[in-house]
Structures are given as C-alpha cells and as structure tokens.
Image (cartoon, rainbow, N blue to C red; front, side, top):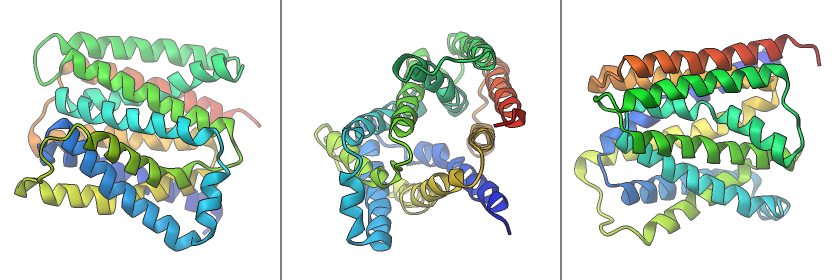
Length: 286
C-alpha cells in the first residue's frame, strides 16, 4: 500500500469516526458546561497520554517549540469547543455541521487579511455560494422545527474559531500543532470547570461520554493529524465533508431529527460549493 492510499484511508477513517460525535453529544443530554468539562477532560487526557507514551521525553520540547502559536491555538480550540457544544444543544445537528463546514471559507478570508494570501476567483466563488447556503439555513431556523438562530450563530462561531486554528497552524508550518490538541482539551475542561455547578454524570450519559472520549476523539484526532501529511490538502477538504454528510444522517436515523427542507437545500449548496472548489484545486497543477 503506497502513501497516497494510506493517507486517503486514514483521513476517511477520521472523518467517519467524527460523524457520530454529534450523536454522542445529543445522547449525553447534559448541560453546556458539564459537557464541555467532561469532553475536554477525558478526550484531552487520552490524547495527551498517547503523545507522552509515544514521544516520551521529546514531548515537552515539542510543545515549547510552538512559541506564540501555542496560546493562540489553545484559545481558538477552547472557543471552538464551547461554540460547537452550544450549537449542538440549541439547533439541529444538520445546521451545526453544515455551517461548521464553511470553516475553509473563513480560513481563506483570515489568510487574506493576516497572511496576505490573496484569494483567487475559485475561492471568491466558493465564499459567495457558501454564504448563500448558510443564509438559506439561517432562514429555515425561523421557520420552526429543531433549528434556532442562536444555535446557528454559535455554529458560525465554531466555524470561525476552527478557521483560526487552521490559520495559526498554517502560519507556523512545517511545525505541527497536533501535540497541542491534548493540552488544549484540558484547558477547555479547566475553563468550563469554573462554571460547572454539578460535576455528576447521569447514568444514561456515561456510555456516550466514554465512546466520545476514549474512542472517537483520540483515534479521529490521530487520523486527521497523520493522514493530511500523505495526501494533498484539497483531497483532505473533500474527505472531511464525510462528517458533514453522515453526521446529520446518523442523528436523523437514530433520533428522527429531520433538519428541515431549508437546511437540506442550504447544506447541499454549502457542501457542493466546497466539493467543487476542492476538486478544481486538486486538478490544478502544482
């Protein structure tokens, strides 16, 4: 098996593993801050333990070598987690994942402003189509159903902060920010801990929490930090759409949560625009 095939399989596995993450959050049925606390504590500890086991004494130096990017990445990670958990609680899973899928659009805008990377016509077209799709989704939030405008706004926040994570990672390349994922998760737990009134875990919430913290987050994180080194970035973007497609379908099947016609139409425009953009970029030489 060559490196390209390995990369495709690894990234696909990571995206598929993240697909039921939203369902696990729904099944936990816990308040906002306890959810952020336990998600960050368990997932962050497992990821950090894995890095310590693999890299041993080299791990602290890997963290120190990230410099200014470390606090910026951590802040963006914490805000992404907070916004994502709130969005999952307040609006439909489909709305959340379709809107979060536009993070590459925000990345392009931020890179244009911060890194002076001027967007080409393909990127501008993608931004316009994605904004149309998100507008349709937001319109549907006022039309009843499981959607809500505050939840949609939180999903936009998650997409924005996720884009900031991407831009920070790009700014310090070839250094990898993946060793910081575990500590960032623990920081999110510390922040949430100050706002948690009750740390107890309801009996029905334990198994989805364990599935998310012990399986989904650590394995998917490893896949999505390892696979992109083996295949082109446009293919990574295409494969990551697997989560945005299958995540809502899993929740729809498991919880009978129909996202609404407007969400399906807007989501199709968003995903179609991103897939079109990635495919064109993949065909462009160099």
